[in-house]
Image (cartoon, rainbow, N blue to C red; front, side):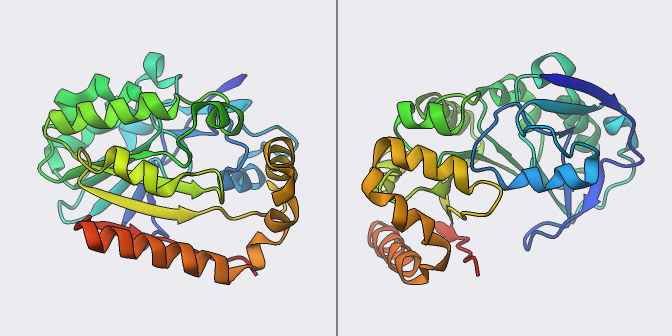
Length: 266
């Protein structure tokens, strides 16, 4: 793992996300090394062309110091293209320092992570008047997840983390992302978590040039009969329309709050 320290002009970046004004990414790169991650497109802009995603992290060491006046009506997402609680955060505490800087301003905060390290900051999280935490789980099977997300905590650990956050009074959601057809066990995951999350978010797998080989290799190893299906998945809008319909029917029937962020390749 190549670790570098960088100075930044500002950690607060205007957001392209529909429901956020700004994003904060305390690190560039991510130690989890998820084979499907779309965020490796950033290598073009951060001087990491040619480096393998998951094998480098830049620590934005002065990032918290750049957080100045914040409009309390603004919404900030922490962790849009990196996990703010990846393992290096345990030592560096960049995310923790950011939260300490943000607390007096009381903006709306949303944190997305796969890591149980967030439990370290429960007392700090509870100081925000408007905060929610999403745990990303795309696949329920721990064995499959270990291959797809080699350095991330297991889905079982993440479910336990959600339980503890909810018990602490923090608004939680399970971000089922990405959904892997015939692997993700959507209904089972909803049933497993519905009693201790406030809502669910859903996002489909998007097979792109950057991740296609790794995804097809995974599918070929475990369900080779699905390789051609996955190869054409980006064009198969009808499949995702059906999955979306099934999710809506189940959640509506059970009174589950949810949002669907499906997108389709061309």
